[in-house]
Image (cartoon, rainbow, N blue to C red; front, top):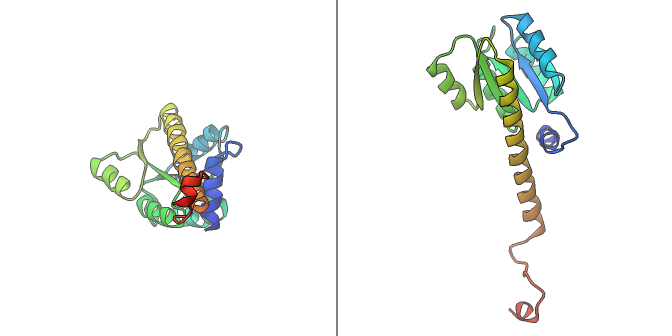
Length: 168
């Protein structure tokens, strides 16, 4: 529960930067480049395996998971399921050099919000991140406002102060 509250607070609050967890094993240079490019606008952590990502995600509490599909050990797709189960508000994006419709469909079924093909077009990636983070901020703010409204208004309360409403 505390994880969800932290993620929701980070995504809704404009003063906090979104946290991105990058999981890329194949090319450490790509991971380094991703980190350097994204750390200007986001808090970024990275690792090379799904197992490392699971452990790191519990401490780092990412708002966004950007993972390669093919990882040593557990796949990026199984990592999606795990992270989404532990941090439901976490946005998940997958990237792969082997683009296939089947993999894209499976990724989307597992909760991925978008599918990025390597070599990575950084301008496109940054656009996707900004769009998805903004969408998530709005969704979380709406959820928060609905919960606050629900807490303030009870079903048995009377709305209105007029004598007629009080009489009803």
